[in-house]
Amino acid sequence: MRPHTDWYYLMMYKALIPVKSLHSAKSRLAPHLTLHQRKNLVLDMLYHVLHVLQTSNVIERVLVVSPDQLVLAQAKAWGAQALPEEIPGHNAALHAAAFKEQQVGTPALLTISADLPLLHAYDISALVEQSAHHSVVLAASRDGTGTNAILTQPPLVLPYLFGPNSLYNYQQTAKQLYLSYATYHSIGLALDIDTIDDLEDLHELQILSGEHMQSWLTYHHDEVSANAPCP
Image (tube, rainbow, N blue to C red):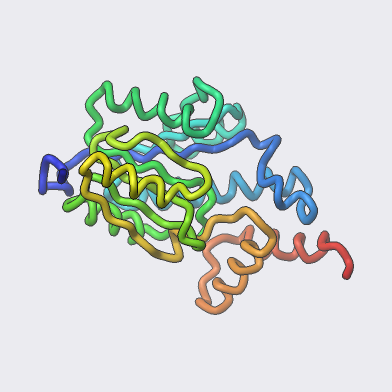
């Protein structure tokens, strides 16, 4: 099955970003960063993703769903629509938010991770362009097993399946439902930040590219080095 229209550039695309509570933010970085530093890192990356979406010229509105009041307040201040999490659990909260969009007739919904510091506007444009030919467009994580973004026409044409091996699960479910899908690969959509190795890779990639997109990167990299345990 293909999307109901070939005029994808005339469609009303919205984006949905889930953000967990800041109190449990990036727990795998706890040996290297304080909770305060991890909270700032999460908010900095969220701001970057929001800014990219808002300046991509293909997303009409950005929604942020979270159980955290500070996240919601910041998202609203940055121009997003803040949605308090109605149902606990990552996939359940996303389903509840997407269901409301389905009910108001939103034709296409991009669900995207909040921790993509190398995301560019051309990544968003590429997803939208592929959606001209596919009902589902998936963005793979670096290891090829996870999913960092999914663009569906309409919302909930696939259930949310985030978790271990989500990319495979999405692809198989799309096949079972006879939905046309594409899988998109780019460093901007692949590099999410969960571990100290991810932060180090991010630092090296920006040095190699000569592009420092965020001032917080050097700041956090210096703090990581200062807080790293002695060998």
